[in-house]
Length: 57
Image (cartoon, rainbow, N blue to C red):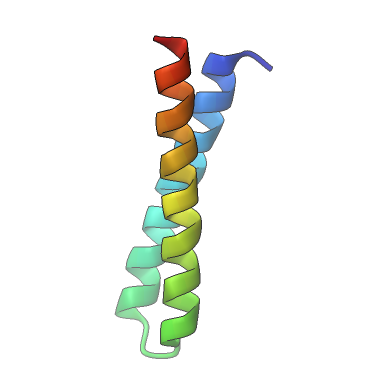
């Protein structure tokens, strides 16, 4: 897998987590722990995307 393909994959996952977070925030059945977990995973992806983009340039 090329770096560009890996970045695209990570960005798709990031978008999916953003959608999951939005859905969780509007759902009364999701607890704060689950929301925090989604936010942590999203932040990890964002950090990895930034790290990869920095290494390419």
